[in-house]
Image 1 (cartoon, rainbow, N blue to C red):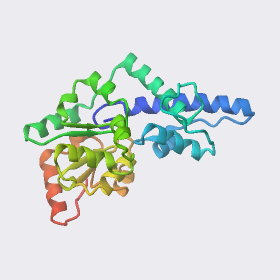
Image 2 (image 1 turned 180 degrees about the vertical axis):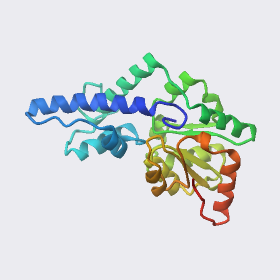
Image 3 (image 1 turned 45 degrees about the vertical axis):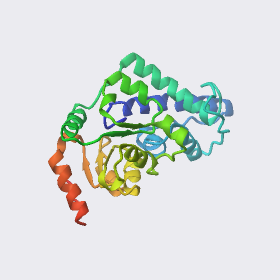
Image 4 (image 1 turned 30 degrees about the horizontal axis):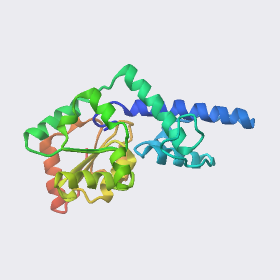
Length: 250
């Protein structure tokens, strides 16, 4: 969803930065230590992007040598726990979405409608627990025959990216074998998940100018925007994969 369908990846990054910088600054002041900010280029992309919310909090804190109790998903945002910090980030995200709305990538929406016109089934798999809020702002929820988000993952006990659980579950809900499904992802953890799940094709969308990184982590085709490919090109690459030929990427 975020970064492929909706232009909310930047909103997530901003919300993470606001939350972690506030926390890290307060922690540094209390302990009389230097403040080291949360960065998009390294911290967001390495530890947070594409991961379930609390898993992202844990991964980043571990990178800084910070240990907090995990807590409970019901922890209030002011609670100093992994879940509390995750919920604090979510409060920032919700405020931004409510005040600014949600924009979509028009090229993605056009491709989705073209796929629907060809009778293809569409599923949405996301680590976000905000899928209902975000999709409700866009009006595109009806395009998807299956939606597996962070809330569904928690109920089913699914592992987050880079494991393939959310994608294989979405495909299964559609009644489609993974080998006959395509994964489209913008996060490194997402293309890793698609590659691990045995999907027919993994398309990486390099919103972060990270073409090589996505390709190295399992994407068969990498584009900077889905306007750079087409249904015909995707079908050709799928046929090449089935024939055991290496897909050629631009």
